[in-house]
Image 1 (cartoon, one colour):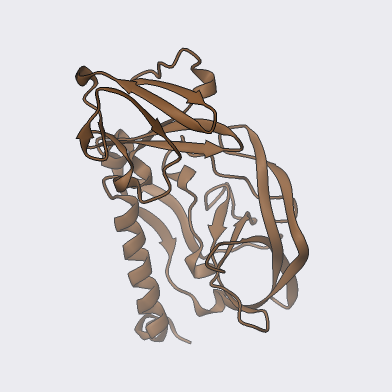
Image 2 (image 1 turned 120 degrees about the vertical axis):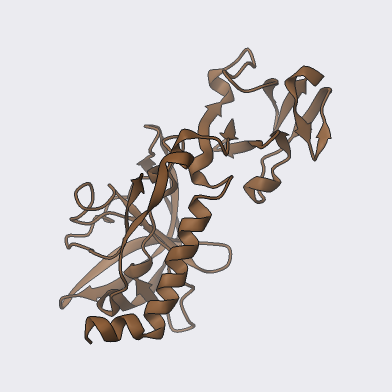
Length: 268
């Protein structure tokens, strides 16, 4: 297929809409570029987090936040003066319970540890961002694959972008063919049935970010799945250093180049 024909195809236009939507989402006021800190409460036993208003402490399976009117905090849109008990925020970032003006203070729990994430629309990263460098749609990288579930879920320990090791749950693998050779990626299964892979390839750390994400749709009843590397994603930590993205598990570094999908963030 010629380049002109590719760019007139419905697949190209669908990819272009997806790509443009990704840029808008990343640059949104509370998108990943606005994350200015992930503060683990265990690192602040006195309850004071630098540059974050309020007094934060763990108590059992909750976080207790104490604030004065001078802190300027709101919870569920109402000014906070006193204490409130909080669980982990699980909804959209802009609907997180705790705010200070435009800032959103998001309560996070990972493996029994509590943290507060600070999303500030005025972050320098958000204001310097220009676009996402991505390879234009190439039908050669929209591959047919097969999902092979494991007999039971597995958890492997992998390093995360913050230097700490955490568990990564895996439910199976996807198999696909590149240049006549079969390759596999281990994947997690999301609640909606879609798949998620953390992977690297021979372009990683060179012409693309050091690792990337792939999110295929749910496989059909026979295990067939579309492995579309055109929609390879930059992980959140490509946009802000304060995310705790997992690195690829053993076996998820491909021995081929994947010159498709999102490659790097571009600042202006």
